[in-house]
Image (cartoon, rainbow, N blue to C red; front, top):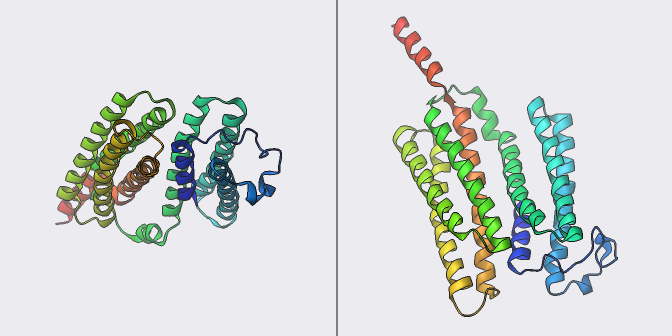
Length: 289
């Protein structure tokens, strides 16, 4: 549910309809949940649908936090559920303040927190998955220190790039920084995939995440180029259906890249052992022999 919420948020920004509903938490004076469907036309449809879906995600996060608190034995994961609840609450308030205060900076923060929240929810999904639990009984798969470092670097660069993208989408400035960020992300991902293919080809979670990340990168570069051409070079104007769809898809693929890099990094820490542990393991084997 968080993914279509991100898509709707991207549409709202691409269509420039973020302020068509001038009040919050009400909608044109109505209770948000009782606003007539017959009046949801034009930009109001996208903005109000975004609010409703945000409420659904908020409700689901409450349920998630409660279920984790009462059923999960891992204390850190119970706390992660509470962090998700706090994050979605702050996100909702930021969305409302964006309307009430008519402040563009809040819109940028709102967009960046949305990406972080999506990554957090995906992480919780991974931690509660059968695949993650099954890996508990397995032994460490080897030294993944370099993979961990590349993973953290890639996550940081992708998130910084998403921030620059939000800045450009909302203000129209910072294109040069966004392009430089894209180059940095491109280099980091190819270094990451090359390392995994050479040293961790037998570790399926790492290899799979790395390959998917590289494919998403190539798709993202193409979407970025087409978006720029259609929106800023072609003479039809920035709000053509093609421009809106491409710009919004560019945001969504960026979100997929972020969560895939987070997943890669989590698996790198899950399946690896530190260089000291690896050396200790090798030494003990030699002594045994």
